[in-house]
Length: 454
Image (cartoon, rainbow, N blue to C red; front, side):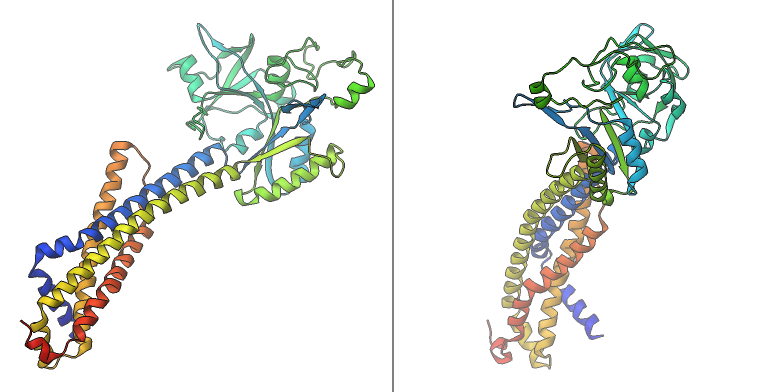
């Protein structure tokens, strides 16, 4: 009953000056509203980034060949073709932390259907494991090609949504034939939409075919020594033969100096990249260690020598972007906390004025038996109620503001229950911290002096 009477008395005192109480809570309203809006916008941005990274393959790693140098000039990454399909098979077999891996080759050319043509952003050659690694197993239409198509360099392909719209408009492409570098390829499947990646590139503007088809039929390249993306070769092969004939030498004879400066690694066939999917994003570091150890052993790299390949993890990019978003959100929260601090100072100021105005009331209550702790509790409750009311209004305005941002600016927003609970706790804390001194000052008044106060 004492607590109830204290709260009722505090509410009655606040109702005497509603305008002053409203202006007092304005700082709390602005501060809490800013905190809620920033937390929801920041959470939405983080969720959007995580979704985008997930669409690109958050647990993916890209293994690319290293670079070579000639006469002291480094040719850059990819200038030495050091990766083989055997490396990919060994990674799947000998790396327990790897979920799957897929060889990959690339091309850049025109795709034609009827009187329409388009140059896709991506033309990839890979294996069925590529779709599992990228989380692209759900197709809109049709099905993916199989391992048999890879082994016979089958002329089949899977298209992305953008390529389908450019070439087929509203038609279904399943079973139809497109021409890629004058090679007819039958469409067997249509990928589901993934949208743009973090670099702004359309992931749906893609054609995927067996890597043997892209390597030997589209780009026409043979054995290692050149980049598959823009290479061509006069090597010929018999009908149905996957690999080119090796009866003639592919490389000119080198002098001793040339062999020292530009060693050529003779391999049966090479690929542009290996796409690896770890069992979870947390296993990325372990996967990198396992793959590095395995490839160094397979490529016979001695201790102390640099790797002839490079590994890039999407987890690093995910952590970088998430940390950037976190830093920006915290910076905005610090600005919002300044508003809460200003609001708390305003509440302390008004409560001190209230103590001065009600000095005779305080003296009268003490004269009829009220103790110092009762006076302290009453003024402290008034301050907390002011902050809680301001916090409730701030939560409503902050949430409403974030919804308006999503509606008008199309920014991602995510409602945060944690932010709402934190705002309530912060409001109560501000009321207690900044209301304690005025309440303590009121409880320390001398009853006789208070009754004589004019």
